[in-house]
Figure 1 (cartoon, one colour):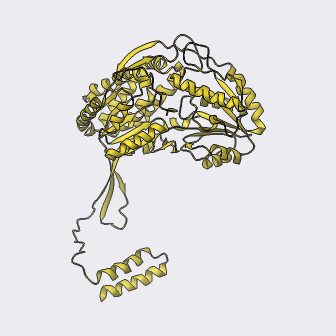
Figure 2 (cartoon, rainbow, N blue to C red):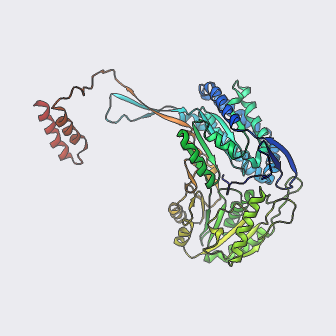
Figure 3 (cartoon, helix red, strand yellow):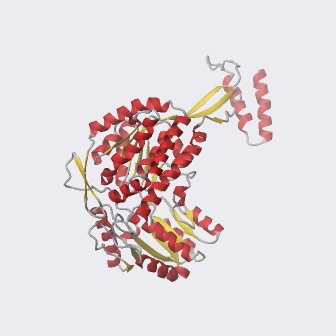
Length: 527
């Protein structure tokens, strides 16, 4: 779940500490020490030592550790939700549904399915029938994870769970925006690992600014999993070249939410509300462009405006609210700039449209209509609680508009016609599409998650995400102990014409051609 752009928490912060503030109240949370490059290299070295025992562990032992993590998350769910509310400004509901639930589901899926995807896999040996072919899925070693700020709990545990189950140690660099919660999240791993006889160094969280992340990228880890902005993704790639470190990049999104004229409008309205306002829109999968067919446009706009006008903002620690805070002053300014630009160019705010009146960092839940090409809000990642609606006349127009962005992460299609929705989904250039719901492709853990184009590459979740944490090693070994030498040297004048005819026998496209080649091969063999 990526960030819109790199956002320093506090320009006045010293290089040695991170000053932590509650986004919803601006109250101080204290400071967190920065881990410099030397500390990062030391963490990676300790992780490499710890990985030797962890990588040699059985699947039963790994499952036991994941079960302990799951029990901890469930037993301390209220505490963890409050942690997220204070550090990231979320509502309690958003923390529970968007952080705790995905973590629990990923743990459940990995415990139940992880082993079958990592067992040695028999493969065809092709022409070599006397050989046995196998793929082994072996740990890479130490995986570095670099997280954004928008899901403090889920962004740490999400990529760490498959990396751990695949037998790797993990070093996680969390965003300076949510450094305050890192110590408590570290405790989840520490207790589970120690309870089952493994070193705490198997999973370590480090804190810092850009220099800390850069040090992790260049530390010699065996893979980097990065979630964040496109500019920072480029920096990760540049740093990874130094040691030829493979990377998974989960970057930004500008997801389209398409409402066909045959959609169930009330269902579409509430799916759009979820897509836009969960985590105050600070999600890479947020529905940033709502494309509504002209036949249901007025009805959809009227209903969604009524609902948005009822939404409450504020600190979730002292009262019930619907939409939480914006993580930083810089992000709040970006949302305001994009909305103001759109209104100046002819868009209308039917609800909201400006900063909130509360003392914290809030932007009013907003419905924006009459958006047109040329407005930056249609192309730049918004990451805010703004429902941007555009009228379309056909499926073809909706698809064309959806695909005109440089991003390609997720999407949504609302239609009662299954064939129609599937046709639209297949035409969208994205990594995932949910039909008649919002965002559930991420929760269906058998499905891979990731994007195309500026949204990154590589996959998290599912079999693909789990195996991405391994070295798929190919083994070709004897099936039968024939021990017949394959003589190539010294060269023989008969070898070339014999092999030439043999290739024709194997690869001629017609039966007649293969038969003719077989006769030629026999003649060559006898001569």
